Image (cartoon, rainbow, N blue to C red; front, side, top):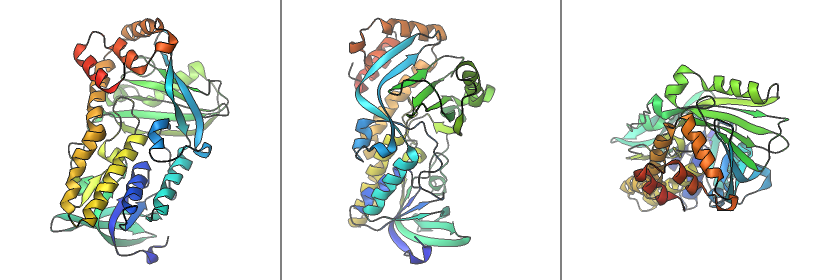
Length: 393
């Protein structure tokens, strides 16, 4: 779309066309309000900065699974302890490794089909205000500075989000809570294409984990995340190089990405007059797994609906109910995941080996993720109560 054909005012402007932004735009547009989604990059879905793993149930809430954006179907996990002990964990329901470029594109098409307008290569560089309320955005497009007004702005501009900060929302994250991540996509690699592999230990990914996620046709995403404190002394790239030299030397590398993932609970405040924040920008990432695709889409759905309701009812204060709605749906659960993460990050390699050995004694058909965490935290009763709240053990 050419900017000359855009209106100068919309009910809602969404900044960022990732999964969270597209779902915010879609669910708002479906309620009959005018929506404009702005994306700074040339194409929706680029660049990919993600392990690309999701649950089947997670995406079925939003889109029908389609082989065109599913690279691999996963039915089990393999947890690898520091001493090499492997624990296979069958999944009750399939998971997917996505082709994010295609997946994100399909989500944006959903938003467009619902009535949202989309403009790419639109770089938002400021907000408009009226009476201390956000009232639109400033942007650069094709070398020109533009202003577009709106009743509500939805910030879906990722972990490096500036939009919320411009609105006075505290978006700062301590570097110790930011996972340092790096990932390569490798070809000609021999791994089971129905299994996600997770490696643990101080030599592969201290205070984090290392992963191999298959992508079909003998390819896989290989990467890791470590805490900010670890990353200061040894980079995630160095851990990756060590692993590849030891296990998969001289394999063809198709892509390489690096960045930060917020491994922390949701921001204390994710709404303000005229604005809400969704997805990675709001820290809606699962702090235990680092996964943010599905939770970001959920945040976008909740935010888009509430924003549209605020516009239609002409009650913009309704926007401020978003914080509680998110907390009730996933925020409380993420707080429990954060406690579990903090408990297991301090485990020694010996402790991790013992957990793996204990879990191998459980018959394969009786293994669940809940039982794995119960085994790991058997000497931590307070955390076990939290585990019971989120897992069927």
